[in-house]
Image 1 (cartoon, rainbow, N blue to C red):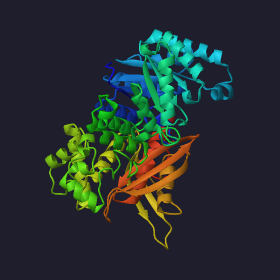
Image 2: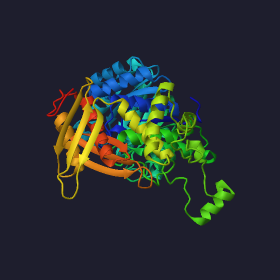
Image 3: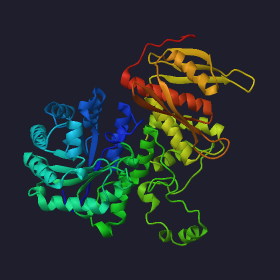
Length: 516
């Protein structure tokens, strides 16, 4: 690996999924992994095989299907966990086992209840075991920024000697300040005799809003791998935002003097895909990929950009994959126009998929006078969610008013292809729809969150519904979109239930109404 290249390590599928409510189905993880491959990240951390059968299967599938990047699997510092990670990575073209173990006294004493000598022995044994399975081994001393430096130096030296080819310095609780973090890394380079035998990596959390700043400060003093997540998702306040790190290094290459191998034109598409699957919207003022990132409201700014873009834009929006214009399509638009626009938005469709998308587009264009880019993104997201459904919404009809009892009739297609119909009343129209669905799909759950948004402006806008349901302490996110907000609500609930059933199994269909 050239010394001046920074390795981009994406942990959206592992640390990103640890964000509350970000549970992903196998098909969704695989779709994100394939998009990350198009983005050309160097490493994809696909999951934590020892944590659950579902995570094992996800890592195994991604290792088999995604071939260009390194596929990493996280592992506890135990021999069984390391073996489990190796088993999941068996079909990977470029496997990496990533071993982690707490190193700070606060973690060692209160969480692990061990001493420093025991931690050292565990770390060395786990790295040695991982090395027997594959040559590429990463070691992370968890909570490194609150670890006594001399012990950290000794731990890193021992694990490199045991075979670690990458040593990662995690700011696990987002405690570090950039200048302080840089000093820690300089200390590691000066006090770990064999540090030249391993890539120095960083993994920063955003509890103080400094994850990206800390990551960039680390690169400045010699870190050559940065770990992060798309859109900065992850535990608590999240991880370093990968798109911000990448564009920071590229835009200020004059300052950092390093290169990255990422195809930045895929950043916008990747951001939108992760947002859609996790149900976490991208805030409008989000750096790089936010809706307002390249919008100029001030007259002075508008005047400057019209005369010379670089007066107020330090990046070209095309460089991250934002389309060159907001082309508006309508019901008279043809297949070629739709195909061209979808390709510009980053969608790669087969002829069969294009035919299905065109039918859905025509149906939408009959309801809306103008179809914008954001409408198309919603259309493609809705189509993707339908492809992975077990239960599919066939029909919903609601009767309600200020002097009527809200009543909903719902028709679903179950996994065996049977048509199931039921009706119910509720405290409101959405409640009635959900009660009717529950009568068909009898999966107990608790509705934790219900959010309605608008994809575009106007009374004919597509409504976007995000819901989160909980079962057994695990939260599942569902999204649905339609010009009819009640249909969108039904789609979102079905989407969340399908995710739940993908992980916990599908119950027998039981409808109080008719089944054909």
